[in-house]
Amino acid sequence: MDSKNIFDSNRSAWNEALNYHQKARSNSLQEGFQDSAFTTFDRDCDAVLLEKLAEIDLTDKVIGQLPCNNGRELLSLMKLGAKKAVGFDISDNAILEARQLAEIAEMDATFERINILDIDDKYNNYFDFIYISEGSLQWFPDLNAYFAVVSRLLKKGGQLLIFEMHPIAYLFEVDFDAQKPDFDLLIPYFEKGPYQYKDGLDYIGGVEYESKEGYWFMHKLSDILKALIKNGMILEDIEEYNLEMANNESTKVLDKFPLSYMVVAKSDR
Ligand SMILES: C[S@@+](CC[C@H](N)C(=O)[O-])C[C@H]1O[C@@H](n2cnc3c(N)ncnc32)[C@H](O)[C@@H]1O
Image (cartoon, rainbow, N blue to C red; front, side, top):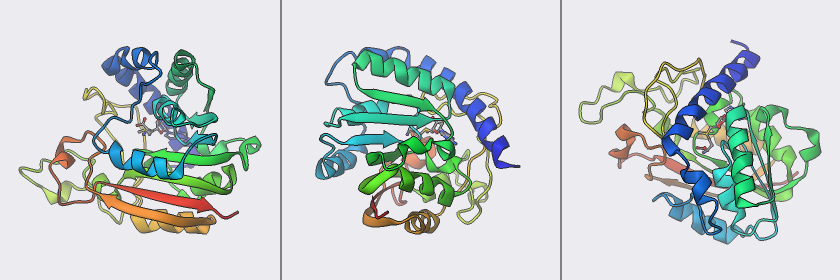
């Protein structure tokens, strides 16, 4: 499968998924963002994120998110004092919703529908801070290419924060029943894939549907870190947590496993 097919398929699969997410959320985000104090960083796992963001201090910074989905996280980040925000995502429906939410929130955030790997050179050396959140890295077959984009978009000294599902948590992106564990079902840590979510991507409403084809890839922690290093990023912090981020019934009970991690790195180019 060539990469154009992978990204075209994922664009369709995500457009379809957004219809389910919007149905499940109803108007909650549209209503929420009418309130200037509203944030979506209200999950249990967000406490460690907010602590780290306070340390980094987003005041007057130009911030970006890749990929940004419907912009709810980027708009919530802006409320921590950022001057300007730009979000990028491949899904047409996600970007339409993000623009609507920015208008409701009356915030200086712009959203571009684009494959991250194709982000325009006008954004080179543009950002003081880039945020990558859960469920983001697995859509990219080649992390070197992905972090090359992050590196060119950051100003020298600009910071990247990744708050993602741990690669170990991706082992459980299958129909795994922790009460009756069948380890043969697990995604192998050392096999990149591609894999498919055949029952859809409705982790908001929990509806299972026959999904359009979409492809994701397993990236082990060492590959993530190596891709950062290769692209001139200096590691400033790393931590692993057993905080569940994905609303996955099987991982919720796996408190002996690392389920999420945070990396802060600084651009040296
Ligand atoms: C699980 S979300 C991650 C963002 C955020 N944590 C969230 O939950 O909304 C995954 C996003 O990746 C986007 N995506 C997948 N492949 C992409 C690509 N090649 N370029 C840009 N966005 C992509 C999808 O459209 C989707 O909005």
